[in-house]
Every structure is written in structure tokens, then in C-alpha cells.
Length: 155
Image 1 (cartoon, rainbow, N blue to C red):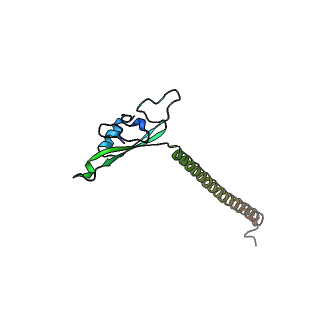
Image 2 (image 1 turned 45 degrees about the vertical axis):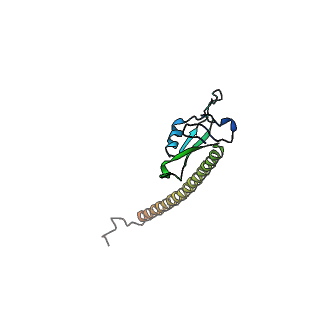
Image 3 (image 1 turned 90 degrees about the vertical axis):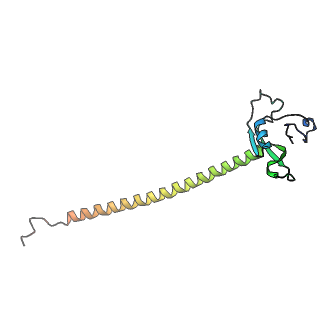
């Protein structure tokens, strides 16, 4: 918990009380003005170490303003900022599972669509070949049963 001087006044880690450890002073300042802030800290290379004031690698920080509801205008009176650090591994795992499920549904849907279109194409192609075959037979019959033009009119 930070006060207006950006000093930690309460923490579950007693060694942090009385220090000004934050890697995002701009977000802390915005939270002191009454805005909730969230920051994602991407992973750092193994050779780079987090110095004092820098949050853990791959963490999500939330700065939540604490208001004084006894003040004349409670919405504008921030007495402290609660800073929460969260490891995003569970969130990342849920997102990965969601992406896997999404790709599986898209793949299955695509396969069903392909099979349906393939079946439809096969039926149309088969019927076209049957119609062409019948038309060819009809033309052949018509050619063989056509009266000779010399025989027509000599009757």
C-alpha cells in the first residue's frame, strides 16, 4: 500500500515497508489521481536482473486507489494506492487452452464443410455425367432412327 509520497506503508513483506519500490511511477501517479491502473511486465532475459523498484518478471501489476468516503467529495480524495502483483501463469494457461479449443473447433468445422462440399460436388458431377451419357445415347438413337432424306416425300 503506497501513500501520497509513493512510500510503501503496508506490505505482506515487512522489508518493503518504508521504501519507494515501484517500476511504474507514472501508473502509481495516475492511481493517486483516482484511476485504476494495470501493467503487464514482460519477461526479461535471464542475464537481466530486476533491480530495486522493479517488479517480478512476467507479472501483472494493478494499482487500485483507496478513497476516503468520509471526505466532502469522496470520489476525489485518494488516501492510498493498493498495489497488487499477480503471476500470469494461470491466465496464460487458460488463454492457451482457449486457443487450442478455438483451433480444434475451426479445424473440425472446416473439415465438415470440406466433406459436405465434396459430397455435393460428387453428386452434381455424377448427375452431370449421367445426363451427358443419356443425352449421348439419345443423340445416337436419333441418328440411327432418322429417316433418309431421299426416302422422305417419295411415298
